[in-house]
Length: 419
Image (cartoon, rainbow, N blue to C red; front, side, top):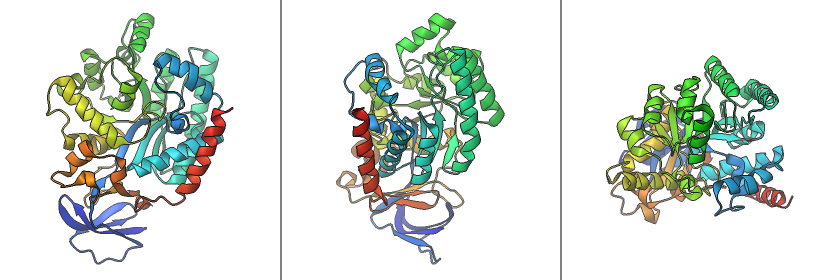
């Protein structure tokens, strides 16, 4: 499919962008080539799409179901019992709605960990976006459960090719307090053999740190390093309780992180993401994530960018930390590097996903600096058009079939809550 975006602002200049099968073939003042589809770029800015580094997509079903509770009580008393009632069909509609919500917010790539892996894969494929998908690997230190989880992950790895290019299989060991050392060693070996990303919660809470010290005599990061799990394929999520030594270990192993300021604040995990150690001292690569809708409570990465930038400034007493442009680049180009995606920049020969931002929105006026306006003044509703792998998923803020998705999702969520 060929696509022509006409008269759009790119780097401050009005341009035409010609795309063939997802690859940008021409950027010029006036493109004369024929295209299968033409998009009017008037009053819009073309930007690379956003990448959501950590989600539990189908938790859209639990949005607003249980709020304002301590983390342990929230998980054990509300979230886990309802999750135990979920079916594959529930997960499909919860994930499909999450994909719709992310498209509406300019997100075309997300990194997910949740139950019923294939239900999420089907939703991603049907919606036309990109998902790095892992099943929740939890064995609770039980050998039988460990073998079951290993067999299941091998099974879904082998069937994952049928959902390409939209879906990439990843390994999702939940955390060191829910996954045995032996299972983590299997994850290490399988990841290395097949070059698969490892997506894991890391140093989210003080309780996790104390568990690791009590069981292994090491911090979570030290333990993962000791058994060889850390590598350039490792993506640790949260990281609020990392210390300087931990960050140095992550850097030495080329491991990456995902920062979720909104979720961490709402669940009151006790510490902020250690920006100074991660960014200034060790320069550990990181991107942003929303987390699930039960703990955020939505999938707006632009809002997340603002929280991240402001918390970085506040916690370091440095107003230059995470500038608007750097923050946007972390959510796009840096995130693409973490997930081994192509160069995430709009230029000839590249194949990034593209969003068009509506400059007529009041929050983008008077328009002195587009990155400042996006990060500090707006939310996902400024996104007008979304293009993923050369296909138009949303134009004029409309996604084909969105009404049916919303209706079926709402029925599913309310039915689940009354089980």
